[in-house]
Amino acid sequence: MPPKPSLTPLSSLIFASRWLQLPLYLGLIVAQGVYVFLFGKELWHLIHSATELTEQMIMLAVLGLIDVVMISNLLVMVIVGGYETFVSRLRLHNHPDQPEWLSHVNASVLKVKLALSIIGISSIHLLKTFIEIGSLGADGSKYTEAGVLWQTLIHCVFILSAIGIAWTDRLMDHGAHKSSAAKH
Image 1 (cartoon, one colour):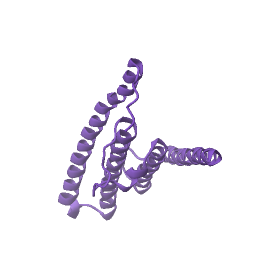
Image 2 (cartoon, rainbow, N blue to C red):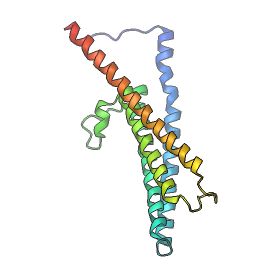
Image 3 (tube, one colour):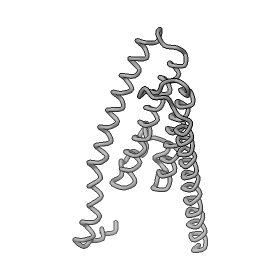
Image 4 (cartoon, one colour):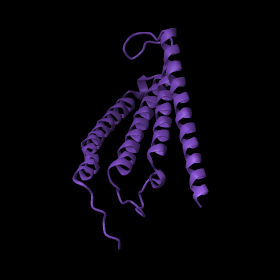
């Protein structure tokens, strides 16, 4: 077994600084707990009010629940994938509950997955807006044409950004494969 290379004190400090992210990931776990509470509260409200709600109101409530789940999924990707990529290995290999995507996660894959999750969340919000057009919004105001247009444009920017990130990562990955093939 080869000896471990020794690091200079500055290198050790810089490398150890990655642990400063640990409180951030723990904070995201707390935030996920808040989302679990919110989901339970919204589900409880839906169950107890189901007989008084219209089909459209039930659909909006279910879309709200899906939105909470998608945000929670995003949190899991950031917590698990970010910790594994930037802080320390979780050593989950051969664990029966290891997420399939974690075996091939890196910063590029994480960026694309996050972008796609944001598009999914934005899609749910946009769908809720389209369903609620003409009725009162949650804050008591009506959706304006300009407001809906801005939401749609922002959603399109998310889509274009995700395509740009995926395309850039593909170009970089393709370039890395070419350079490694040229070495062999």
